[in-house]
Length: 119
Image (cartoon, rainbow, N blue to C red; front, top):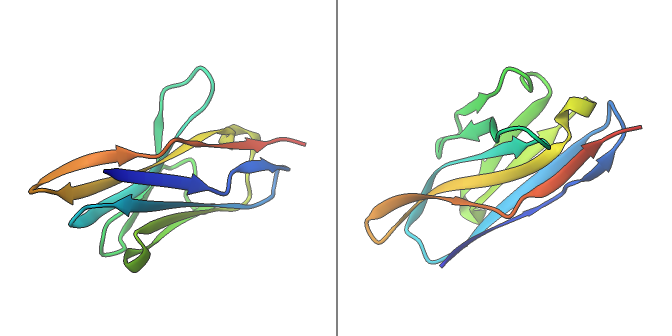
């Protein structure tokens, strides 16, 4: 089985920072893309940032210049450094990983971690 475990969410004031992390564990051959999505109450899930195995990032326009995605391939972990947070960033953040196991690739998702930006 494969499991993605997220950590680092919480309540922060506008302008503050948080770092999310997500570690993949279980039996698999390799991980290609990893990333973060978020879902605010009443909204659809939206992309925040993704990163290739080689480290090339891609960001949603709404977070460019404020968020930084990174990964540690040796630890099968992806991070999301969030700076200059605004109330509109409030959402449940989900990590995902495209994982190759038994000859096929599949997307796996974490359970979600709540981020709340409020004064």
